[in-house]
Amino acid sequence: MRTQQQIDLDISDALSLREGIAARAAALKEIEERLKADALEGESQPLVDAERDGAQVKLGTLGVPVIIEADTIRASIPEGGEDHATLAEAYGGEIGQMERHWRHISILERSTKDGLSFRRLVRETCSPETAERVISASVARDKHGVGRSRIVIAWDRVKGAAQ
Image (tube, rainbow, N blue to C red; front, side, top):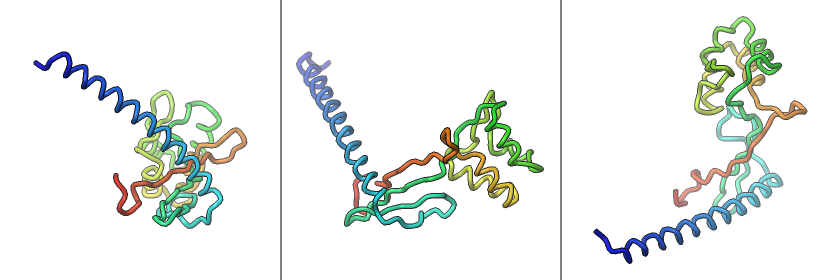
């Protein structure tokens, strides 16, 4: 068994590491907020994934992609509400496909891991007209009906960067 001194040293090192990690995570968050603000003012390009609605901006000499998604698909929709009715109406004659795209619990829960795979599944299983109505009805919206968006810095796409 290790000595109390060895254990105390490991605990001290671990606490120091945790403090350093927290400080670095906070610093990274601040940097990413500045980069997101820069991206909103930068020259946008089409997204790599044409199935998404949004744009990307490449920043710095490394061309770090900052992805501005304008069509966040909801993970769930409460049953019985206006949004649920709108979604059911969007399926129209293809209402049977709804169970392939959403899990029914007490709310409708998206059956795929993310919005991109949801879009692909809907486009593969519905007619083009129904697919576009369903995707539009599935977009998360604010109280004014504007689609919610998010901005993602794609660090994993930077060549030569540590993963």
